[in-house]
Image (cartoon, rainbow, N blue to C red; front, side):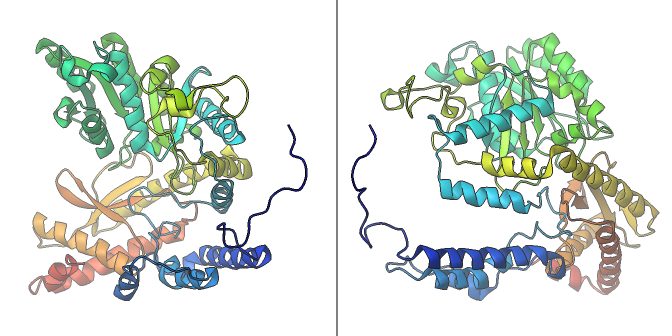
Length: 506
């Protein structure tokens, strides 16, 4: 029935709503203007600023008991929080694999927060927006329309969800009811030695145990070795274990290497194993014609996890997972107690609910910022960013090879460049310390923010290009700064290494 008569109004002080909505809008506009101005001017600022001790101290204040005016809180935000972010919005942020975000996606995030939807299930529009995003992802990765999927906090959670589906589908018992300890044979899986640490964490969380993840050696291009994979599978079967799944990397985190997905898929079919793809960032390179043939076999996989917040430039956090066998996916998570009973009509409708495909019942409206990003930029423009970053990585690799003091440590296969500064007269241990110090100096000076990694035991300066704001000039500046800082530090170190020791302390 429709409501009749005068609607009740809450009295001031009984709700958390403002007394003056117009004043609230003015405060919101001022705060958003300030944040957008900082984003607009990011190139002029240091890439990264360490949080000052005074700010840290203020952020250790005791629990507030009394309210503070919103404008005063916004002043605190502007002074103590806004200037000291990760730095990944800056065009010379090259560390780890962080996307730069985009303003349309940020607007979607804000609007989603104002709508405040729980997308665990029920019949409301946020569910249909997420379903649309999932359908778009099926199209991107050539998964069947009948596949299932949902949005996640990122690939780490996506890997857990996909491997939980694999575990339930391939185990010889009802794992959800009886637990892994009841399995007549130990379950094992496989990933390359270059696979992301989240894969091992997934094995731990799901009860396989870290030792059940077989780390397969890699070839000269850091791709999973197929002969070694076949050998390990055969050895496990011979020793009474049950091989369950293989995790292939579509872009390893260290070097960007793409495993031979087609070859791994063929072996998985032969052996009856579940093939999962960790496509955190590299999977989306399937949108680029140059890389699509190397990634086309993703369509043969049983599942894939990927991130929107990396190469699709959606604000953090936003990832996704697709599972080809919807029944296996749902069987791994479905649980509908009485208080979540479905209905054919009303708000309790909207079948199936997303909570039946993952561990979370409370789920935010992540899909809206993805929807805003794709709708306002179009997938072709986003793909062009991916292509440009890969071309930039190729050119950076060429620049490294052409520079007398720099050494390329791994092939440039996608968007990651691993290199080091080499100074005459320093042994490998000293070169490791020198390159660690160079990275720290770059960060502290606000010039650039690469990260470090180990490539065959040697410390590398690692540059990951997933930023739509990065220009070729930014990479020229990076190379110049690495050489300049490397010369300065190696010159001082010849007199006793004081600069290298000091640089390790921050």
